Length: 306
Image 1 (tube, helix red, strand yellow):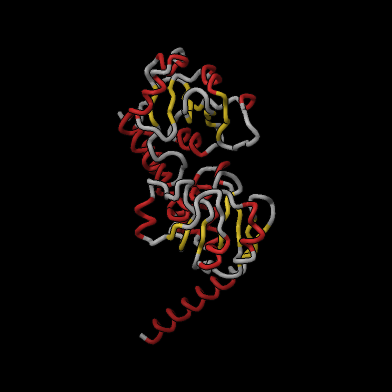
Image 2 (cartoon, one colour):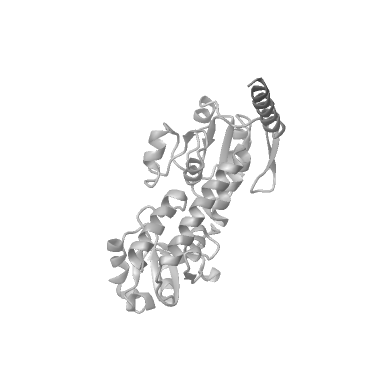
């Protein structure tokens, strides 16, 4: 009995020593700079509502987060944030440094791109707590999760969470009977405003590719406006008529909402409209994280499952 206790004590000491040796650690930011994280974070603050979904997915010790432009959290994980008492901070684009300071975070997460980016306030945030920069627009949520896992020191937990989801995708792919030809992903808003078409390297396209779809990527020359995005090309409405995929998925839309594109007389000659193969990707698909990805997979199984 005494020998068993001594063995357990030795293992505990070894585990504590191994954990201690992991800190401080250097995190490579998305802008090429580095941030030193002195100890394992226990109070994480997210300045990006998009990144918040992945922080929740990997069980980060998240205490507060910026919201979307309306002051809300995303619907796909709203209940999770409520259960974990995540405090709502400022709306996207309205960083409040005093609010961040009052939360006493020991790690702040900033996104490199997007409306919720607080990149311009990086130096000020860094004076409050160690601050890291990530870029969700150029990778899957799984890739982002692994980066965040390194910063949090819970790499093994993240690996398990990612592996479980990847298996869900693989199982779903084996059950899908997909339509012929390519698919595109459109953020459709109609005439008179800017619309958007997904690039093949964006998170939405990565997920659909993993399910077996062949993506029609946006033509980069169509881009309009001063802001470039890594996941979508912003296009004038008329450019949508040049899409050629046999199937279209509409971002942040249900099948009922997708009918608005199907009834658009300007777009009546799109192959996907002629095929009557225009579908909503889901109402909670503005950003891709574990929660919205699960919804997308579920919708695909319901629509194309054998």
